[in-house]
Image 1 (tube, rainbow, N blue to C red):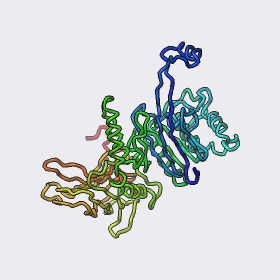
Image 2: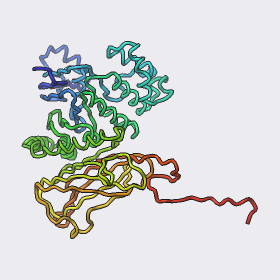
Image 3: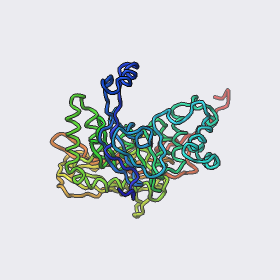
Image 4: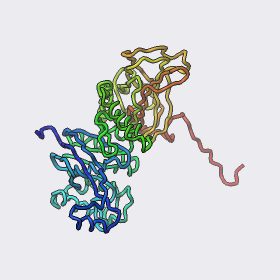
Length: 450
């Protein structure tokens, strides 16, 4: 097989462990020369095959015990496969389970150089990177304290900073970002996006589906050590959500159902979704490049697909740096892939921390909604607003709903689809998020005065 364009090639990968009921059974097994079995076998990964192209960001998702961490350890060379093979082209930098890699008795500084030496870097090469690592980790004077004194968040900060500093060809991240605070997670997401732009291949494991949907165009769903689905992230997440609530007895049937349902033309049926996600990711790269949504949650398409187009000034210029007191409109397109009745759509402005500040619907009562739409119809929506926000970063969420009898259901929704920033105002003395044109006056009264 040619390695051109392929970063990781996994072929029929299987990992089986021997589980012994008692420590002495290991000795008995050795002395039996294979004539008798004193153990039972547990297959953590079974006949898994896939390719990852250079520059791809691929999510690995699944329930606890599905084989995700085993797969990553096999790819990183920490474990040896029982059967099958893994081929990795390029330097791998891995951020696996908390506690792995660092010597707890070394200081953070010493561990930086220690990790660099393990990856083949000289002390001088790591010294040239050290200031950037320390700045990204942002743990202050703890950089010179033993790692055993670190909190889990401090550990992950330093470990992630080291992992991304060595310019890997392949970056493997296992749940690490979930430990950090929101500000650190936002920095991590921006760094991952930057690394993707320069062609780094990334494998990303998380139980936070909003992280998977935001970072990964494609995701691999594992369950019971088996590869259940490999394809568009929005479909993999649908499969994960179906398995997560399934009883143990029903899991074999559920895996087969998810595999057959998503694999039987699922990618072709939802092919337009990939174009939507390309549009979402592109919004963060236009105009001011550092303006990005901190969190993006996607509700699966259920008859419609929203494509965000951006924020525009009233004269039609696309912008993402807004001025207080000026009117703008957010534009998006809705492609209907199924017929629906009583359709309405809306937009909501929110903070990066997830507080909804205000928005509007296209209609309130069913009589004012779009009465019917057909599959193949499209709608262009403009959500107009006056910027009465204080300086800071914000997001706009978009949604479209329809009715089936008395039941209203979401056809599609993007939480935090478009990001924007409100510029600083030097004379602004008000507080929090929204400008209510409040004014504060102080009338002093001297002591003893009436």
